[in-house]
Image (cartoon, rainbow, N blue to C red; front, top):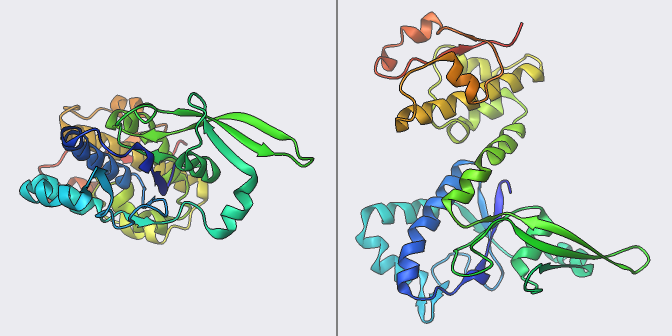
Length: 289
C-alpha cells in the first residue's frame, strides 16, 4: 500500500444505521491518517459513485443522506468529512489495457472461495484495501487469498498471498511505520523532501539554513538518506512530546525511536530563535564520523 488503495464496496451495506453511525467516524479518521502518510488516491469500482454521495450505505439510505443528517450537525464530523473529500478518487479498478492482461488472473478469498473484485485489484496492483468492518472477512487483516495464474504451457498455478485490509486505527498502527518508510524511501532529492515536508514531517519546523540546504542539496545520496531518517525520528519524537507521551528530551529517547546517528546539541541559530521559546528544544543531528 502506498499512494493509492482500493475502497472495498463489498463490505456494504451496513447492518443498520446504528452500525453506520458507529463506524463512519472511525473510517474518516482512518482515511485522514492514511492520507498524512502518503495515501493520495482511493480507487473505487466502476459501479460505485466516485463522488461518494450516491453510495448506498443501508437499503435506500445514501452517503449524502448520512452527510445531511449527521455530519452537518456535528462540527467535528463535518470537518472530518470535508477533509476526507480532499483525498482524490478515481475509477475503475482496471484500465482497459490492464483488464485485458488480467484475463488469465484470478483471486479467491481463501476461506469462502469467493472471488471479490477488490481483492483481485489489490493483488494485481500490489496495494491494500480500505473497508468498513461490517462483517467477515472485512473485520480482520491481513486477508489470505489464493491467486490463480495461467502458466506458459496452460497450467494453472495457485499460490497464497495476503492483502492488507485497513479497517481500523489499530490495523493502521501496525502498518504505519512501513508506509512512512516506503514513502520516505521514494524521496531521492533534498528538493523533493522540502516540497513534501508538511506531509512527511508534519510536527517539525525548519529554521536557520535548513530550508536552503534541502532545496540546494549537493551532497551524496547516503547523507540525504541519513538526514531524512533523522528527520523521521525527530517527527515521531515531536508528535509523542505533543501527546504527552514524552516529558523531556534525552539522546537515548531518540535512539529508542530508531535514530542511528550521533547526536549533538542545538545549533546557536536554533537555540536563539525566539519563535521557539515555548517549544521543546530540538537537537541537531550529525552523520557518524
